[in-house]
Image (tube, rainbow, N blue to C red; front, side, top):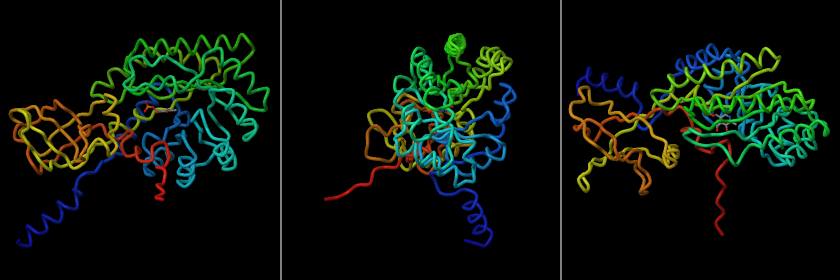
Length: 374
Ligand SMILES: Cc1ncc(COP(=O)(O)O)c(C=O)c1O
């Protein structure tokens, strides 16, 4: 190898680490944040970024510099935020069900903003985090979501009213309501239905003497597919009138956009390690798979797959794209159309990979249980 070729080889290696890896484009996150805030008229300090979606410290730092706040699902996530220099006063402990120990720890760490959706949680918060601010999470329709977040969380409207009363009787400060329409919810009808639901409940609570000071829209904004922005624009037309009405009534509207801020900012790059023809189909084996963070595929989520090595794609052929593990569920896509010439060594990109992929390790901050061999 002559010197010129050697230097070229070293530079290429430096520019492109060996696969698999995910690149996060910070400028895309900034663009998403600006777009979200401009279009829905949010100040950045009304955005609570849920770090379960991506807990990379550089992303936390970028959002902190932009004056965003944070939502945490566990003590480990709270500690991670504090280690990144985030002030506890801007952290919402958003998991509706927490152990006594975790409430005590959070309180000792300076957290005083919690979500609850049951009487049990109110009882615990009142004992272990007295005088805290509380958001009551209600159950709302998740129709149209790519991944539903119902049943396990959220109280009924009737319960919400009683939980509010219970919280104020028990030295807590119930401030408002939160909900989640489910990840990547493109159903305009559902967004409208949920906004109306929240407004009806707000009026009911008002009539019974309970003033709502905060409404937390949660996440769920479309962000997974190529047409997401078109749906986002339509959704915002439906929800903006509610936001204006609430803001004009003195209510603080906050939101927890996760995927919207980071999903399209990440791309996974992987290499083809083998190509095999099996029962009339071509199977492409990659050097990373479903069990390296893409668990969501098992629930039906689809990702975009592209061959980055072929400059001129030419004829496309149907491929099964699989991961490297010895597990038959480790399949990214059974009917992916890639250039027929796709072969060993090609770089394959999978996107969007900025949300819930890297953070799927110790998801929500909950560590794998240690294994004790006896
Ligand atoms: C409480 C809470 N807020 C916000 C989010 C982020 O949702 P999304 O990624 O749809 O924006 C989640 C996702 O699970 C969540 O649990």
